[in-house]
Length: 156
Image (tube, rainbow, N blue to C red; front, top):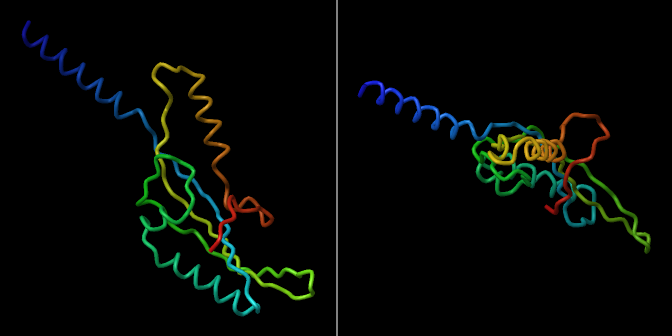
């Protein structure tokens, strides 16, 4: 009888431990951000500013990138953040007085893992469907087309 109680207790502990561990699942996402420099007097200066910023991003660790790049998810695995690509562009803007300002732009595509809740224990299916809808709206596809726009526009 004592053995039966011990076995029952062990099974109960194992099931409750598995339920706690299964509360979250890991997902992977791809994001993009657009960084724009201050105005420059020439195209070469704008390219230099953008290249300098892109190089500084390339030299950052995953933890540093997690502090620099926007991540809309709460439970980001900061060690998993990595750059997929960086593209440098120059944009010119004609002023009213006839002068031209040049801006360096860096399009950064990056990916990371995050943990999502499987749903509220007492919430049932409605909270899980809201969670899934939130996930879809915050996740972008990096190569959905050449005309796709980045998620954010941030200063360099």
